[in-house]
Image (cartoon, rainbow, N blue to C red; front, side, top):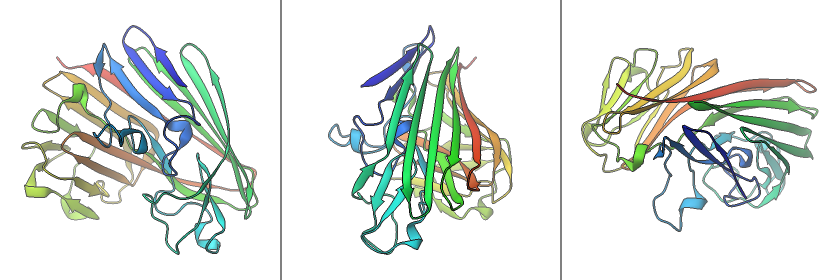
Length: 294
């Protein structure tokens, strides 16, 4: 089932946790697959082949523990570890890789939908000292939406991980190129990046902005855009061809921002560090605003 939140400006599609995408990477309570603004598609897909779309990222998918899920390094091969928002995954190799397709034992999910909001929860069973309850409330606003997260540690061990939203964007299916400008609230210094994949120097890095000379012919990628500095968790993407902009602003500061994309989609990513002691919880929000350019 797909839930649709809709008002005069926006239309947001959210898949049921147990429907459609069922791979072990992205959070199943975060399958915000499609966003339209005044009838114009704002979101995109990781892949463009029809037979691959539901197997990969779409819209506003988020993920916990992209590098190492909680408890992975503590267990033996063939034992099970938690992937928050998905369930238990079976360890098949000494090292975790987020694109591997692990055997999955799904968590317990619950959904409560209203006209302009939806609440999804994910309960992870007790395993290897870890357990949790993730609750996510998505509210539709007049010109955007907000996602409220609460993660409760119901296990015996601390939950130490990271979470981010992948944000697959392509406004009106416009290919990535000179029409787009991605902006941050700080000066960009390429010498402080951890990784920079800039094929044929297609990206122009100037001040607070990232722009494109033309359509990228292969994947582009930047990690650690803020150079490890603690900065405001916010980005802004504008498309001058379709005269639409979109921002994500979180209620936390971050020292980890990445950017991935290719010819048909761009994905800015704001990471949050999570460290939750047993019997305590952590809450945070991500708010998206969509607007027309003058």
